[in-house]
Amino acid sequence: MDNKEASEKSSSQKMDNQEASEAIDALSLTASSSNPSISASQMSLEEKFKIVRSIGEECIQEDELMNLLAKKPQPICYDGFEPSGRMHIAQGVLKALNVNKLTLAGCKVKIWIADWFAQLNNKMGGDLKKIEVVGQYLIEIWKAVGMNLEGDQVEFLWSSKEINSRAHEYWPLVMDIARRNKLPRILRCCQIMGRSEQDELTAAQIFYPCMQCADIFFLKADICQLGLDQRKVNVLAREYCDDIKRKNKPIILSHHMLPGLQEGQEKMSKSDPSSSIYMEDEEAEVNVKIKKAFCPPKVVEKNPCLEYVKYIVLPWFNEFKIERSAENGGDRTYTNFEELAADYESGSLHPADLKPALSKAVNKILQPVRDHFKNDQKAKDLMKRVKSYKVTR
Image (tube, rainbow, N blue to C red; front, side):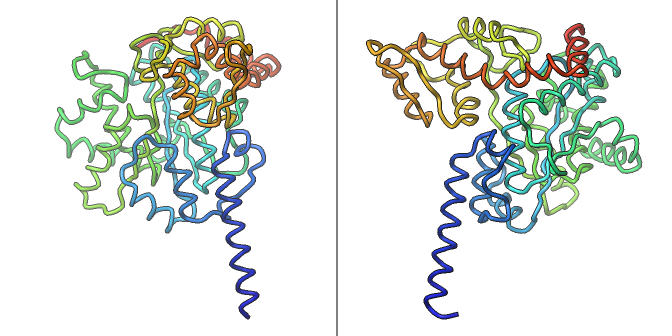
């Protein structure tokens, strides 16, 4: 190859890298789910790392993540959920965004439908048939909202079926984890079930953390992609690796937990409908909930409306549009949260302008879900049944 050819090849590679980098920076759910402009094979290691790392508010450990992406073409990511009632927007939209980022970066995502875990935790009154209906309903929502389920990069696995089919692998693992840990250590993991160490727990709920820890190894997960509230059991899995002298530990990628809409609510609650927006809420319901939401003027910290913009609207649309009269400052489009936060803190952006814009954006995201549950008979029947169920703790 002569110098000219080498120069042209180098220039072409730089252009490809630049285009890939720009596409990553402009990543939105619609771009990544329907018609991705780049594929994992076109990305550099640093670009894959940037996408995957962007999902987590915390990563344990970053150097391990970089090493994994360098050595394994298709890392396995594990995410799981209890089918425990209607789906709120954090579970619906954030999970879809995160899954689409992971698949774009070349990962395989195993979504663990933890039906047995919901039964252990007394969700739906411990009725496994109701829990299964809720699980099917949740899958319908992710299909409708735009989770990229094409190909084989996303796999939904029902815990009861998988454990029963490979019981000889699963239960010895659970028993070994239980044998190697003292009861106080297991009790510290109760947060993963929405419980505290002070709660009166059943024996089943004490069993739960050992099983969730085992899931990580049972599914051969390289990355645990769960919320920050699941951190303690993921750390338990890494400690278990130390106990058994296993070198390759699961990487913990913990995403942000969206707060409830009311003041002082650290997370959304399915038992309090006013604390969150559900994925199939009607437009009027969304408008009322956001209108009543806690949103103090000039206060950015712990402001749920601003968190919705930061973690849902901006990642989805890559912009947030404020529509207002000229005397109130005129229309404004934000493409990053820092500018929005600065304007809000200064008072140049008021809650009375923020809230209608947030309602409009959220309703636009949810409309395909509403349409699906109105037009698809199976989805409509599932939602009717789920809404009739009593939420239990």
